[in-house]
Length: 110
Image 1 (cartoon, rainbow, N blue to C red):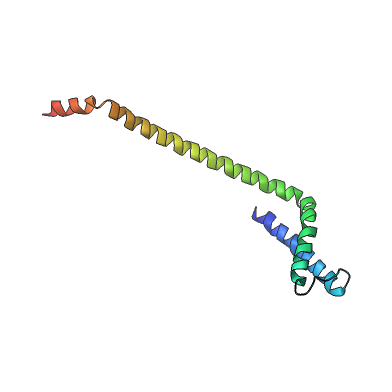
Image 2 (cartoon, helix red, strand yellow):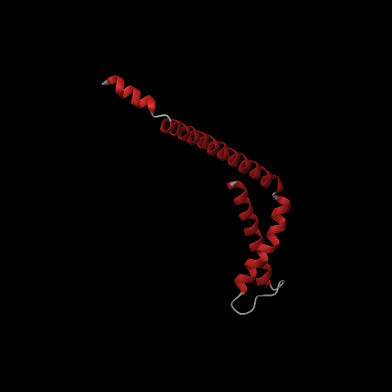
């Protein structure tokens, strides 16, 4: 997952450098007033998204498999914890419903 994120940031950074060079060389028009940096950022984002979608497809699929495996492990752990809690609650309910075992044990001890 970290690898995909870093690769995605790398594609964005590359697009940012290229767009910044094109804007300052005059090939692409500048933003209005002080908005030039925002213009370069937005244009870089718009250009890098489809490039990342195509170029990083295999890495994105690999990252999604890792996420699915992690979610499945977490679900299994939650189910295991839930079943342990249910068993403890069932034992407590059984003891509360049948207290004569404790009372008989105390009467015999006296």
